[in-house]
Image (cartoon, rainbow, N blue to C red; front, side):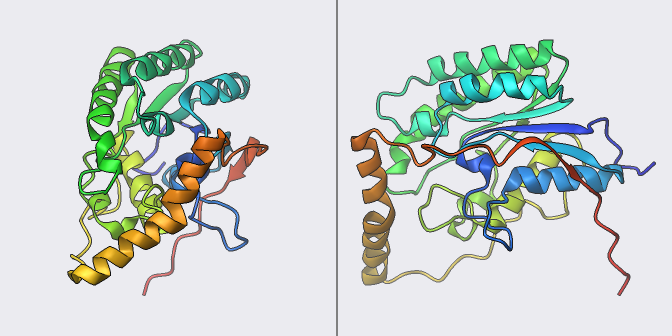
Length: 266
């Protein structure tokens, strides 16, 4: 048995676009994401297959996540469930982080009563991000609730707020809302750390500072973001449509994740 052995062989991921794995494509273009990567790390650590389901769907608020994904997850009888949501709720100007956390806690109670270990995730610190920085106070209150819920019910927490590496734009897709492939892998390492498995050395080391932009470059960067990402997002909010409308979960039933063969010594 490897030194990193763990008890989990049936892992189910619940959530929104973050957990679905948006903008972290597999070779065929399908979304991968931190949860897929984490499932692979679990199989590698155990040195045996892990059953993995991912019910997350992009654009979902926390209440629909729970309403649509909780019962199917329980039916799979998992021994580990990640439930990471609330980020889309927090983006709403009138969001109540305490009410959102109360919904989250009720779901955690159900999962724990069913015998599953639970892993939650905090919101990311948006300090320094134009517009999104306005959500920072709400996110901080929500995160405080997440840690309290975890303490009450023995859950694990991915501390995305505290990750130094995520404060670098090199971890993010151009929309500034989703991690890129590098960011997703860093979060997968944070998940290992959350459940007490050893992450890769230096997993949260920040990237080197990017060269400073000129005022013109900075303005162009902001305008490109507003045209390509902020504008369409606001348009969906006004039309009350979701990026996940009509979409189904990518792995509604278990798929088998096998350990990767060891890399040959150089």
